[in-house]
Image 1 (cartoon, helix red, strand yellow):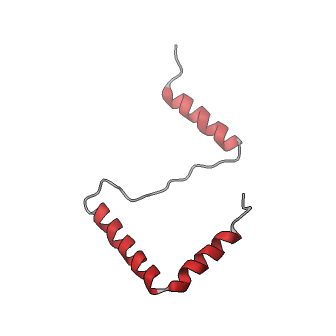
Image 2 (cartoon, helix red, strand yellow):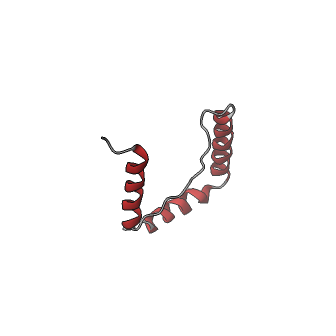
Image 3 (tube, one colour):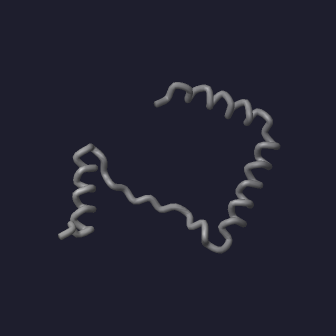
Length: 72
């Protein structure tokens, strides 16, 4: 008789915990929600406007990217 799904899931979770991992729950925006695309567009326009208003921001971001080289 096959192993019940709940037993297989628990076995997998136990193996992951034994490997030093722990479960976490992450809530993310629902991309299917009405207005999601409009809100993304609104925020993207604000960022683009901010980028145009601050010419030094691009240089700052480029310098920050150099600092992450070699991170693992």
